[in-house]
Length: 326
Image (cartoon, rainbow, N blue to C red; front, side):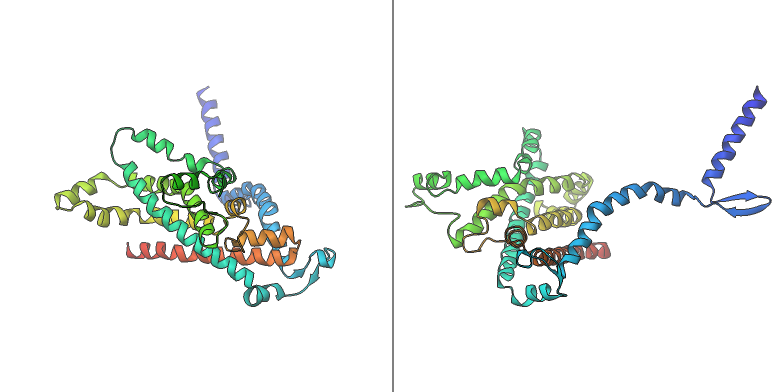
């Protein structure tokens, strides 16, 4: 029995060695095995890569192909090759695109800046010790958990010039003398949308920064206190440098989301008044699905994708600088 057990162990070890080693012996010669561990891993990834290609790669390739075609309701939805005509129009002759790009950049810069500053303040508060801290941490995620379309509909009623809560409160307090059409005036519509976006997504920024704050060792703050550092010195020389990777990641996520904003603007203003709140995503939707200009809409989507890559590159430059300095 002991001999048989030893033979079984030896056989299992030899079998495991055959599957683990990239080379096997055959007739005294070393022969490279075809199915190595690395190739076997690629083989396991093949179904997922095929699904990914069908869901992602093909639509992207099809979209790029359509961007060089003239396919719209005026051509009977038949495709005709036009080369870079659509891209030349986007860069030189489309004033509405430039307006939408300016609106999108303004919305992104202002909303993300507000959300970062407020989120950092809330994160510092939630990271301190106070009674009810766990409840506050749990409830801060509620605005972010709400669907954007539902939240935007609620804010649309709040901003209503006749039935809105905002006008009612401000009139009762004597701040306003008459009701204001928050979503109907040019200077106010964009800032109303920014305020609504900041109300929803500040909690996301706060939670990400809070996670970064909790990863900072408390021993560093104790050492800084021994060296005589005050609260501002600790924040400047301990908190900010160690929180920088999380800040960059949070800014990257929120910048891409704000740059591609659609549902909030569409529910609130649909790009009005006069196109002053029309973002790139709203403009793309209008050209593609309302005007049925698939060729130009595809060129717009490729352009927006390229601009998103620029945002990623610019933000990651700060990450690379941080790594080099470290």
